[in-house]
Length: 101
Image (cartoon, rainbow, N blue to C red; front, side):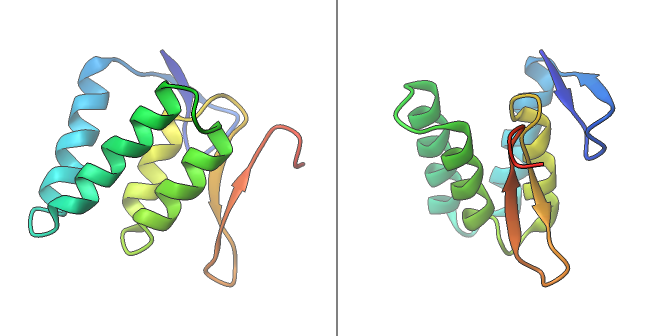
């Protein structure tokens, strides 16, 4: 799987280990709040089942991990090409899509 880095002009190749490492990072970061990890899994399940869009999943992850910007930034690698969560100057997060240039 290929994904964009925080620089949308660069692509990286992701593999299963990247996804597992990201999951472990979430689990260890929120070891005292297992509901955060479970909520993330629910978001991914909803996205995989096509119950929610890429924009909705990104928005939910941004909200869920609002206290950990590094996890939000890391999630960008798993979004479809052209999608990313961007931090505004006011500290708010915005989901950027290919159509929101």
